Length: 121
Image 1 (cartoon, rainbow, N blue to C red):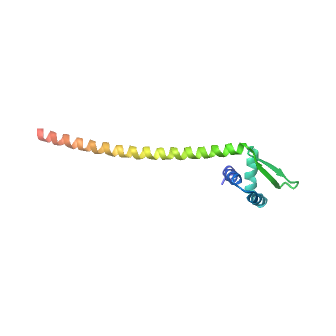
Image 2: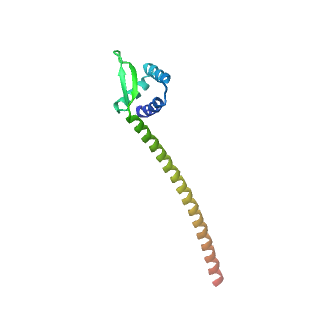
């Protein structure tokens, strides 16, 4: 999983986390380099503020107000993508049904014409 995707999941997790869960996230960053990379990515994007100890470990983080806006935009994008997928599916089914009906009508019209021609001969 790439850093951007991990960062998005981490941001969702942080926004819903209690104080105890935030402590667990901090301890996880000490052992999991991918979580640390994701948190640093969020800091680079301006979504969180990190406080580092002298050893370089992250000892505190807080969400910046812009992170709530970012999360809402992400939710809106996901909702829009699913809406587009559903609309595309419905249009595809409607097109298939319409094509099937038109093909049936065309076949019956050709059969009627061929019978008419046979009777006229």
